[in-house]
Length: 485
Ligand code: NDP
Image 1: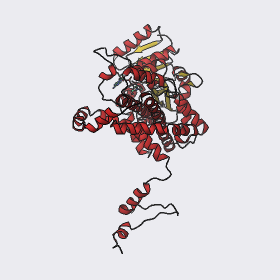
Image 2: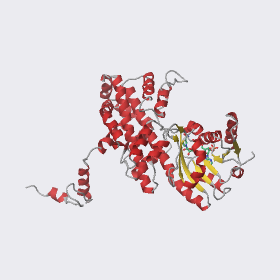
Image 3: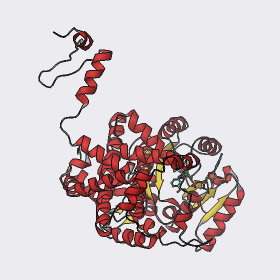
Image 4: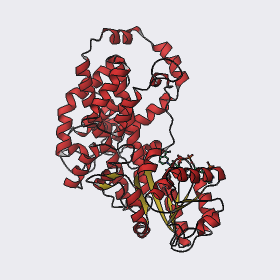
């Protein structure tokens, strides 16, 4: 290696290896480092195979750091948590004032803020950059959500603009998100929304399969058709493809052989915890998390199915005469309407955090950079961007005139699907809770008056009145227990 490289990357797992090759392919010579050597050799070999890409491997951390031109930018794609702290410790001793560390992992935003403070003491700037798109995204163009030092972002922007996914007419899927851990926070909510999308799609599948009795071939056709319209998205596309894959170890389709247990790594849980901390209702996302928890109880479910496999529910399913074409249409509409609710929840969560932290996050711009590269990429996001462009202070996506009209147009189908699922004993928590969210949000009056009265009754928590200002307390107990005349 002659001249210093333009950038460095540490952590050559699935994401790191692919992202390093992407950066090199876009014309930026890159130094790479990993805690174990075989991964370095593999990455360098692959870079050679894929067109002699300028990737230079180092197993010595000092040589790695010194090989990069100053001010240095070093991207970390390492298992989040203490491995990142360890790696920062290893590398930062060789770094100089003005250099920058960019953590691309799914990190808890407060860890990023702590590290930003620690690095500031050494004169090293810090970015926490959400990266979405999995293996393929990392290699060909992910969605990037960098937050932290605005000045550091400016200095590395030329690289990020080129390596991010490129969407015609709306540009590269990267923007400076905001200060502190905002990039990690936005990526966390992206993942929460991803949980919601996947759950809603799974429920659509369940209703179509269990009630509509659609075969895998029919399901594939339906999803491929859906992918031509308003639901066009990466997740709908891959779902259609999954239904077409035959089992390579036996007969039938592979999807039917996959154990019904969903794994998770924590970002969905953090999203729900943050929503609760900020008093933001996020029932669609929460129900997708609960569904993953329940899916994990496979043995208990097998036993419960034995106990509750009641004839009545079986009868409902058997007796149901279903108009397949109409069911497919209804489910499509229910899925779309539920998706609007889910994104409304995610966006409101981002806004609430932005207000709490003073991040000044731009919701329309965030929707724009999710249009390509990432797992939730969809044409739908363009509509969300436009909604926030029309009205940056929109209280909820649900009340944007275009989305409101779409929900109104779909609500009968949505209600039909939810009723059908409930009557058939098919759980559809994402669609059901989305509908409940919509029905709660759109009602001027809720039974919350009674809950507040109960609170005042037993806890003297006071209440407000609808007809006069102020705070009131009533001795409900004394009045209620007075002898009746
Ligand atoms: P992998 O498990 O494939 O790779 C993890 C990397 O971290 C390896 O290079 C590993 O080195 C290194 N590592 C682990 N422990 C340590 C340690 N103590 N010190 C130094 N290095 C260590 O993970 P991914 O590439 O999938 O993910 C990397 C980050 O990107 C994670 O934060 C992940 O959440 C995030 N991410 C992942 C996505 C995906 O689709 N996979 C998508 C978006 C973000 P070695 O194996 O040699 O020990």
